[in-house]
Length: 285
Ligand SMILES: [Zn+2]
Image (cartoon, rainbow, N blue to C red; front, side, top):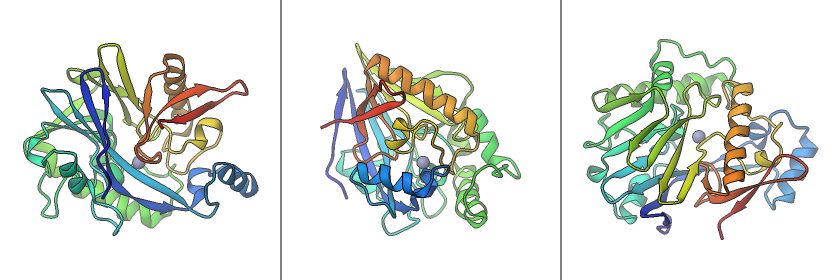
């Protein structure tokens, strides 16, 4: 459980809601980096060099008219995950009150909580919104995961297994998006491909304020400083790097609030350009 946290974007209330976390081998996040250099970067950030904690932070957005949930966490894949519903309740929202669920992409840590233990949609009254390319990729017979550098058993097990378990049951509540769209007033779904074919980012705006949710376009703050460093997770490396650059340029030049799904809770901050190239993460205090 985590203490409820919220911030405002104009008249819209945003609550980052934790689903928990899992430990990862650091070289999954920095796959093309010599070991010593990677350990140096982690130590410089006050982080342990042998393990990265990947946090899963969903976002509840209350516009006054709509209650929108962005991503659904991993579900109970480990004792330390699947805390979304408990924390959502603490943030003041029951599953039946959510009218819109945005699934930013089809990875298990984002769609694993979309259905319950019986395989029924966790959010019975919500329309589930997903990018069309993404839905088609993960519901195809054999999604091509050959460019993802994780162990084969993880691809055929958790990754494909979760897509097959969680996507078909939401079909009746599904709405697919093909171009940049306003999902509900104030919330835009933006194409951010590369991590997966139809990975999307989300912009929340009200009045003159906005927050840009990068989702998995950037997986770790160090990857802002080192834009040439690659993770094992991106299916289309070049496209992912281009998307990352575009979104970070926009975030830095507009100096807007920024979130990213796997950054330390509550994942909120801003992005600054660095003279040396790359960007700098400035977490909200
Ligand atoms: Zn993720």
